Image (cartoon, rainbow, N blue to C red; front, side):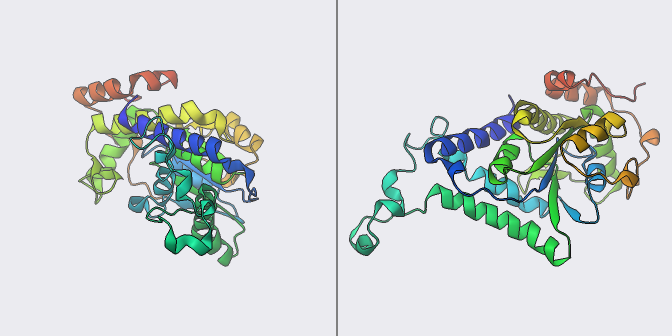
Length: 305
């Protein structure tokens, strides 16, 4: 398990630990039904799926405030609740930290250096935050449903979002990592981002095949591990135009814009005219992705010498 997969697992462990200890699912269940499209890295068809699921009454936000990572940052707030993994005391946060453990009238006479709302309040606040950030402007535009697509969020973030929005639906997306990196590399060469796109800004730019493969493998493996906990299919970019894939989306209650299937918008790169990966790039990608790539049916680049 590489560092990206491990980080997604830390989110899951924190969410599960907090949920078990504080009975987080006992509160009111929101009726929101957002759609989350989570892709294992860049150049994997997430924008195509975004268009397929965009309808007259649904907006899918595209990587909103990407470098600020508002969703991932919210999910990471639960990591310290995993007492087996964290370096905090086994019973953190302590019961005496919560306001409900004190008499409000005696707070001035009490040790209150650590004074917290209940974890249920944290959950409710995060839910309200994301609903306000994405649902409110959609409603203002006359659009009743909303969703988000992202390329830096894996199975851990998906589990967090499912906790926030139990009625949410998901599309977990992968693409052949060799082909995805080739498209990524050429996009950087021909675009304004020659220094690479960031997984986490400003300290984690993705600059080469090995690093791209690590991100891809971490996200893809965490998606595969936790797909059963999410309401929605895990699909491959290569299968997007297949009837079986669109039927799978519909089975999960996802309305589809049939006219958008197979449509390419805004891509200046012709897949057929791309140069090939170098032998060293193929080696680095194979070394960093081989186990999960082969499990998902990817055994090498589509374009070969």
